[in-house]
Image (cartoon, rainbow, N blue to C red; front, side, top):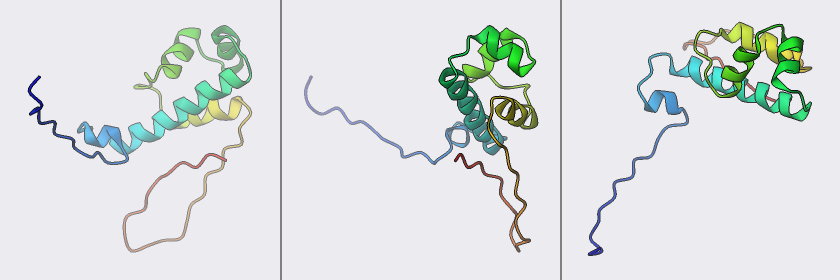
Length: 109
């Protein structure tokens, strides 16, 4: 090595899906957060994927895909339902009207 290697570092945004050019980046980020919470809840409850599937009312293979971050084809509403079935309270709050477009964000307590 000659010590003259130039490495370009580009700072990303707070949404990796936007950085990768996904058109539905905000939705993908929310789904990712929900899938992560589902995986954490399953682990915290020490459930097997089979037990989690029974509790959630879905196939074990779908539990496996969701907990590995493969959630394409699963709606945000379904992921919210799964989070609730794992014992979390899910609360949707609609804020006051603003002059700009509204935003959707998740907050975990």
